[in-house]
Image 1: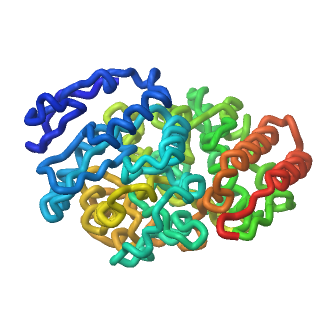
Image 2: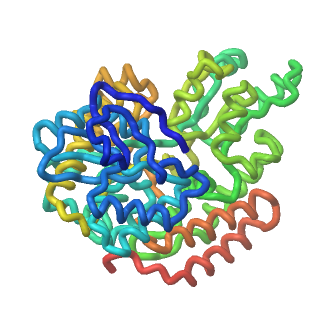
Length: 465
């Protein structure tokens, strides 16, 4: 993986190049020239060891008495932070900040982070982590509560709840990625609909009618609704939305009680299975995010369930629907609405030599000032509720308006903080069971009965109990 040789606003960036510390652009090192596919756990632990010994990978100057190392940012995201306010933090505090680049896929990153923390390395000090990792990592993460001078309750409640494990705030929300229903405005108008569907029943009826009409007009590859049905983490999100909206619970309660084997959940999954081959392509059971996005942005679907990050992809010059779509909340079921939240958080290692300064950096990067700057400049959805009524944010990120009036009870987070280290096993059992239902390999009743036994056998003890 090669990073470009560029300078950003005069800020000095350098990479494992002690011989040329004054150079204002990137200097490639042997480690950095490793291709993404050849990054191994061993190599990354070597990097962690190098940082521990004081070899900066990617630093922002001027240097201060304290240097904090931050892991998990991509190059461009890290390079953008100075212009979004990080330079002011460095200037005002005298604390130097350096970045370790992100590596591999999500599973690779989690494995390396766990191994690094298991060895109690004092660096990295700060980690950018996935929304489903706080429960897995919480024993290694600093309780940020005693260090906070801003009220953390300003963040979206479901995100803060997700970041709180065993009563400890182990991370803070950095930016939001939330699920939306994308719909074709031109086709709704063409077929006489004044608004997008409010319920799953309305969605099915509207999708079927539009699909029939478009195919009759010669668009044989057109489908009513696309989503993510492959057996992977994305299906856990889809299925949890269906389950919650039908009143079937959210897999596991905070006290460890399993909620999957009930008539409401069976009805939810039977409904979703009925879409396969009718309003959704048979191959939807192998779709991940890129597959559904490609179908929609090529003009071959009326509706799409996708994350908010897809808004800009559909607005790009290569999208055939860039002026013909809008977004709204997911439809409701008989039990209400289930609106998944995702995104990334910032956490501090318990083994950092500078916990106070690291917590200060995390609080600064998750502040209203920085979240607004990142929203306006880069289009990131904020995690602070007050920014959803900010005119500048709404102008720069129009999709944010969808969530301005989302009810607190509509937000749902995967139960990763409850299941903690066993979340990966829970999720895998869950999405595999749902996939058997979608593909007709099992009835909902049998699949859910089997799933309940599997989840009980995991003997999940919620953190702090």
